[in-house]
Amino acid sequence: MTPRKPILNSKQHDAVRDWWRSLQPIEKNAKPPPDWLLGLGRADRAHLRRCACLDELLSQRAALLLAKMLIARNGDLWVLPDNETTYRRLAWVAGVLAMVKEDLRDGCTLTWHLGRSADADRPVMNEQRFQRLERTRDIDDLFIQWRRAVRLADGKADVAQLADDLLTWQIELDAPSQRPNAVRFHWAYDYYLTTRDQATADKPSTDKESDQ
Image (cartoon, rainbow, N blue to C red; front, side, top):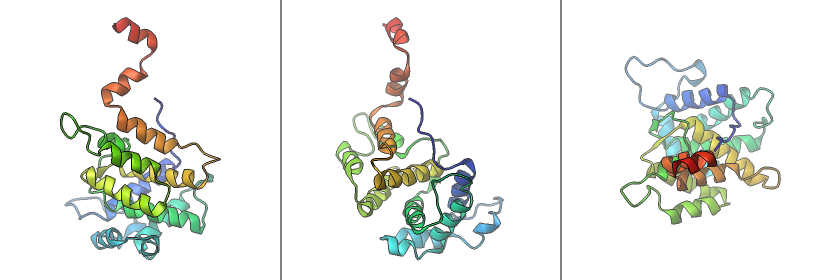
């Protein structure tokens, strides 16, 4: 299946990765962060992780800085107007990204990893919990579940992909009549189909028949 077209551009994805790295422990010989990230560090990550609601997130410099810089890199796209709604959406995103411990940079959705088998029989996230996540419409509840999903994945995710997915999810949630539920569909696809299943499903029918 064709991957979902991202709503953030490549410069915005790079900014998300730079922002996330600025919150991590400093690595030896690591390249210094861009000037706009100077001053951010592990303390800011800890503050974000302790935030339990939107008001708390919007009081964090790190969350506001992420929103400001993504808006500045918006170009001619409509997706991130410079208004309060955008800051709210990106504050939720910042609060979830702060839970990520390792940026996998693999271009996969979070549920691609959560649907893999923890052992021979069970996925990392059980189906009941995943279906609850897919059905939830309340953003406060979604925030809790998104964070829980990151923890279930051992804190490993592609941070740019996750940011793009969570932002799109909120946009679709706010305007269901204007946009399809693209993110939830792709998360379900990646959760329920293993890598082998996906490859088989994507093969032309003639190839499938010839394999029989």
